[in-house]
Image (cartoon, rainbow, N blue to C red; front, side, top):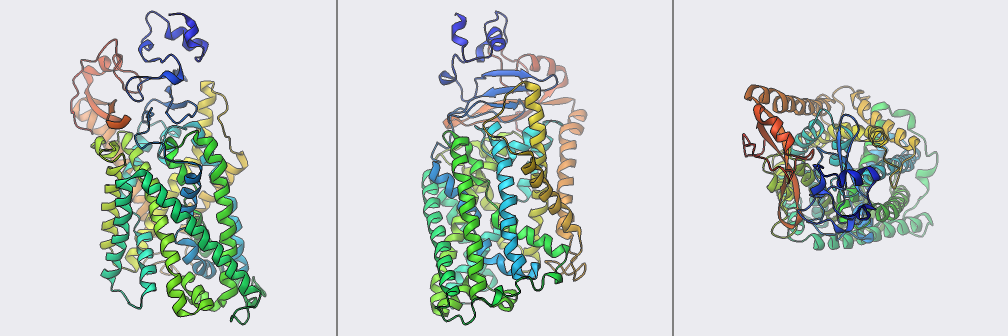
Length: 601
């Protein structure tokens, strides 16, 4: 074979590919378009930066090569979940995730935390700025790994490659322990009962929430395409709802409704700001972060998007700007229609109070169907994205029974992760009583997630250094350093401020017991993750006389994952000589090394 066939390779790689004694000759395709054989089995390039092994692989989504450290989950050459995510779907995956329950419920708590209308409104553009910085960080990370779905799970894995498997194991355990979405389902159930005259018991509310959650899970299990289409429809309804509320707000401000003083809240709009403290301001930022949360949802599905970076770059920022604009206008509408004191004292969903003030009690009940649909769209889109993240964690090989997490049989959907999410969330819906316990569990999720987002953002600089050592050029997108640093600073703020006592004292937080209990518990969970890692990766292998290695498993529809296996100490040299850095057996020298335990660790 002549060297004209390797015009797509680097010159050094071309020489390696045609070397008579090359160990990698079997795995080099002739062109990127002609990759054949087992899904994900063909490397484009094999690199070494002096201490780490890297591989480069193409997915089937038309993206550039994904260069990653070899311990990372292998790229799926053909997405087993298909390529159903279009420009339109990327837009509404983002919109649906951001517009959930936040804009319909958090403005009242925002006002209580900020103390004044002016400061509460000022927080929304602050949220836009921080979120835009965060989106640019995710863009850059996605551009490095454009054929890996799973978002945060991938970026942590690749930014912190040593100690080997540490971040994947820690993130996997944290994801398993805190993998529930009960709050959105409970809020949706509350909306539903507001349409009726019935006052639900605690169990009726929980039962309704469970039914909503189960319906969303079934839709995603039965059809990927169907769930994405329904998400698009609900996203359109969401936008229409916020546009409708904005128009109503302008009409109220014009003085043509029964609202007697529509501009009263805007006089001396910063009055009351001095009554707020650091704890309250931190809570306000948490609320804003929650309301803009989900801006990164589309990045969880990049391997299902054709030309993903180009597609998402055109749509996700537009979605963010649209949502931020509508958020601000809807808040103005709230303050035009509802007196400040009533917003602060309100125990009900502020959107319902808004409809009641403008249209009357009967009409408000009917219009509450709009927030109900919005909440369901958020649940659906959140589950679509998180199911891909959990699946990617399963593909890393650090969870038991990889087939459960990775296989897409029988419907071509991520059934294992969705079933797991359903179980965990159902327990959290039915188990904890309303009040302190529920608020504690919701708060418990926030701190570990803030830690991981901080690490992911800091990881941008580590990945840039890795690529420089490998001699790789610039990716399709690079965030401004200032944007990365600002987003990093916002995460540092969120990590520090939960430790500051509230003005009401150490028992004056979101629940009646010690204000930092959830934060301490979150840190304890991370510590348990670290202890589990040390025992699993170091202590048990030393006691058992084996080492941990990875191998590659191939399933239906092109699904591929890693599996961590035990190899006896005396067989490690042979194993390493008969497997490439990613764990695939070299075709020229098939492995005869017995695996100590066929089950996944």
